[in-house]
Image (cartoon, rainbow, N blue to C red):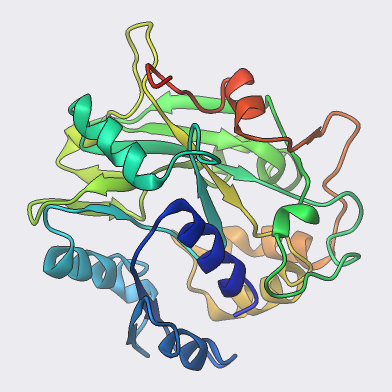
Length: 285
């Protein structure tokens, strides 16, 4: 509920016309808030997030039922979608460009944002722009490899690899996602939105020397609530993979560390991210 007012505002401003939400047993007035929104369709379930392939079974069913033939954007509530020219061109313009170049999927990197100072020092208020607090990011410590047989890129790095998985960065969370897809009933997400079937949908970056258009998911996980949420997530044991592998990570976040360093970059806008090579306009000018 903390993030939803701004999440909706941001994506409405991009031109998203309708939202399909799955509420998995929330107890913070999320259900009531979403049910009152005129552009939201809401499903609720108390079933296991982990046993539903971490929610993918729920979302894929909705996409099969309602998304066939449409450009569908699949996000978590702590992700804000941005793309080249998002400040002046609607998501429909982006979809039209992707149609023109024959693309069926659009790749992004999840960019972890964080404050300067301890995570619990600045209190976020619902409806505010979270990037007013989460102003900083890591610009260059990323590892990229291609996974076979799916053919998707596997991106790791950022503050979570630097701080929480410094001894073994290959265990750090995955940052590549393919959230925007012109959906077909024949498609399915395999591992969250990190990889898809059929495999050709995963080839969202040019590996032959050119560039394909790509975007960013601004990840707002590290608001002040991350401290308490980490204790909760550790006890719930719903994390992807082996939950015990993330116990030390949750303990570290619960200690409210300061993720900022003198090498941190202040977020200025999409053109800055493009100049750093974290996203690309491709041929869209």
